[in-house]
Length: 232
Image (cartoon, rainbow, N blue to C red; front, side, top):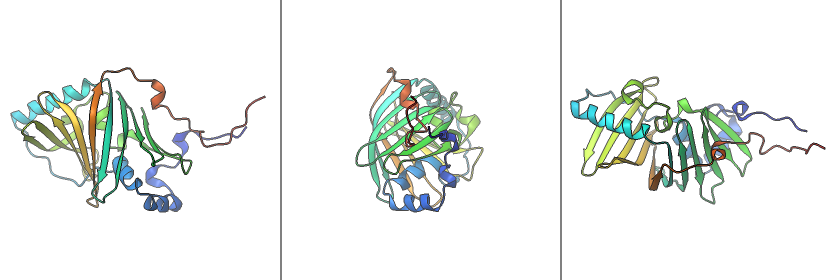
């Protein structure tokens, strides 16, 4: 039997070799995915928080911490013109799955520790720690925005509430903007801008909460692309 590696031993998305970088540049969907995984847009100084800001932050924390499970269709678009769509599943804490529609053969799964990237066409698995991704704000065990993030801005418009966050552990890494429908509060979209100014916008469609999700949705077989002989 061929002995393989766990996906924690596969190349990190941030430290893959030249062949992987060429692959990234030649695949239309991957610039979107890499921005989704690895970037927090450019640093903005946090503004002083008003009492209204603190009230809205508390409402957002209560909403995010109240999510147990969630599913939604999503549309994904970058400022470079790349587009994708698919299904999102989320189970807090720590678990998330993006199933991309054909012709993309991409799968992203957060299993509690890693965000694992699977390319079925190239039979390649890579990963990055969840703690290094902007998606952690959605699946942290205890979402405490003021403790973990600098609040760059809060934007209130008719029927919507948006918040822009920078990670305190990496303030120069960038920002993520969460957009909610308001009264009642519901997550509608997030936007990420990387250090090059490329924006990635993910919009949620027909979001549902509180359903039972199969735990295997958030598991990846690290040997899925290896030739394994059956034991006699």
